[in-house]
Image 1 (cartoon, rainbow, N blue to C red):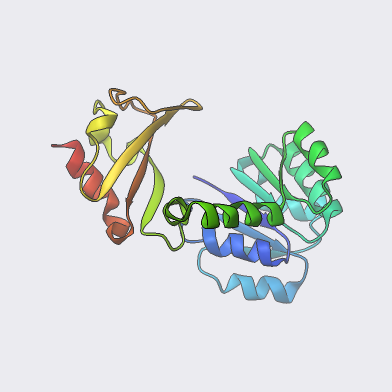
Image 2 (cartoon, helix red, strand yellow):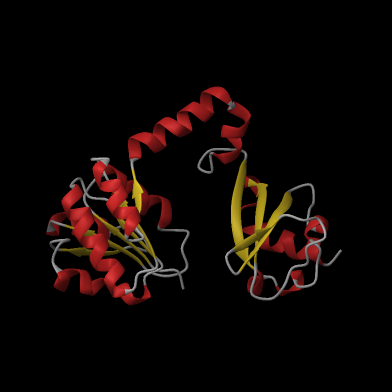
Length: 220
């Protein structure tokens, strides 16, 4: 299961929770500093809301960090993000991101395996794509674009095993890559193996039917 932890009462943190809460297979923990904030968040579907000081190890220990796939420190304070991200790293969280406002913290984060997030830079980068490459922007805008992009575990569609990457396409979807053991393969003749994932771009209108369509394509 893919467990995710989001820390902080910020617009960024709330946006991350809303973007993830219906899409992950495991638990989505949302740690907020005030009880009334946690009560509000607890009303959201698929969210485990907890209140407490994000710099307090006893509070952080409630988040099952040993089984955390992704940890996002998204508070408004760099110091808090640094402390809780470092603690999450020490407890075994796998992928750790921390929001930073002071660029001087970025190198510190990267040196200990934490990916810094600078929301203003991210927004500027995407807006520049929207201005300079509007068709590309429509493609990568997964919230509003014509297409959606997903990575699908082959275990969910076992019929894919043994298929060639280049053959896995239809009028509604296109399999663009195969990922396994930290490597991504784009070759037309690459075979799908057990334990891999396929990266699929598909018409948003397919919705939950994408697995059914992928299975149909695999059996052709």
